Image (cartoon, rainbow, N blue to C red; front, side):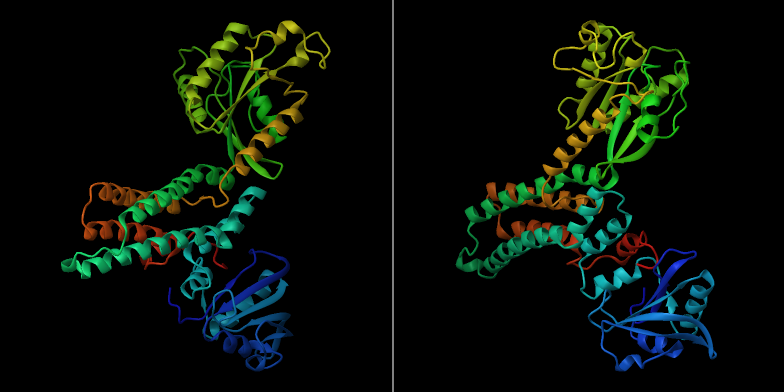
Length: 466
């Protein structure tokens, strides 16, 4: 990516629409736009201004447009930027793009506008990555997370940690210059206290990644149970579409089926799994193995039973097996008693003999996936669990895998510093590990020089117009 070039790209989705926006950015942006714009002299206009005129090709009018003018450094990229709002005809947009490239602009690479914003100090690297997350957000939780990071909440926390470490490492470095005088500028007890406090903050940030990942990608919910209890019917009811095949034949679902639905502005990824039973069918056994793998990956496990046919011993055994599987993990088990519509009783009054099938403290939600009876009770509980989980998260939450890895490496370096302090090692070795921790924290925000290949990988996931 060559920053001295002037770049152009369509910033609205391709295809026909009411309006299409083409963005120019770079040192020649105003000159290139003026070459095809029949209107005011743009170089004489103030930045952050809007102008009406015509785009012409050889005196032939291509379109009447609104042109937004932003002058450096007061623009998204920090460069001169011109945004042309045309009518959303694919032909018109193509013609305007052609005119700009003929005047010397080149087509922008994916994420190049945001890359320039980062290079020109308009945002740090963590904020730049949040731009892509904001564009990709499909739920209220993901949107709020991306907005917080784009506004610099996470970056501010990282910068605060770096500044405190920089202060101490500079004191230690100063000691090395006066080694012969045997003076101590950095109090070791204060440094221990600082390292312990930063390690605690890093630990909380690292732990928040699980929640951040859920907010970003949706809460995984595994639907488990024996064959023919209505797992696929429940999935279809939650999705409000016929996603999974429903059959009276046991073992119809032999692999996990997954889809997403939003409840209360939060994304849930529901996973219908193979029925759990003893079988000699090789393929079905593979599906059952994957069922327990999905339990490992899920944040919420829905254990579904046939309220009419299941017996108490069977239910108790399965609940114990699932609880053993999720013990010590931040997971929720919800027991569901399905097919209550098949009983000879009033659906609003479940018989005591059916209620007694379930262990104490494991009162199920009685429902009919087929008739969608009490489905709203299930979705309300799911929403409640999700909101409690998300509200208990740190105000600063990590959702980016690259940031998570950098934080873990910074933590490892500081643990070596803490160990070194306990062993009274010399200041030069302490400084080495502190500098390494600073390096990894700096990688997150781009404070240190980032390898071009890493930057290329980060911005390659952006759309071209951003």
